[in-house]
Length: 242
Image (cartoon, rainbow, N blue to C red; front, side, top):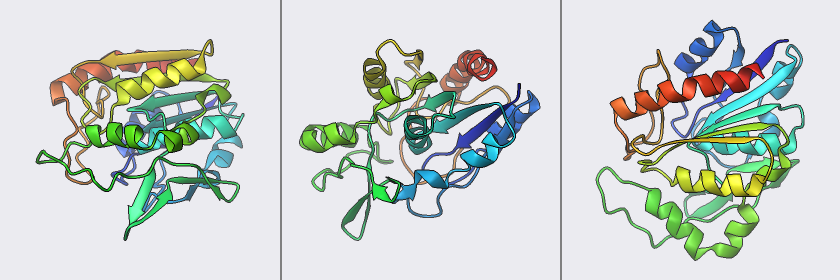
């Protein structure tokens, strides 16, 4: 039985080529596309190359980080060919993109934009480099009605879900989001790993730290992020092998 892996990067816009090679080295068919150029705005969920992987594999797993985890979780809710999702630094909500003051959803499905949590125009970062974790919390407090509509319906995904979250994530509150996803999932197959010292992105064994993307605080440290990667790796392999 062959397993195809769709590997989705986050807001850096840079494919996880090193991570793809690690997965390929242990026998998996991996696609790591660049799924946006400059804007994470109304990206069609249909645009991800799930069909290509499905045509040549028996099982499908989507692995995503940050915005890529947001996409991975959503793909699991709309495509029943997906057997497993690994969401690193997961989101529990669909978020907005803002450009020239206009806010749009990150995603569309069947031509319709998904409901999203708006930006809070009053929030300003206090740190340098900026930490955005409190901005996401504030948006949920300020826009509770929109947040309810934008909640990712993880309970619709019937496959296996692995959530990986760092307690020192400075980008968004991924541990809190993971806990919310677990509650939505109920008795469905869900595993959560948390490292209190790790930040927004873990580092798998054999992987180099990724420094692409906009300047921001991501939390954690190389040592903590590597230790979390070592701990998470066998859990990732177990899901891939099931």
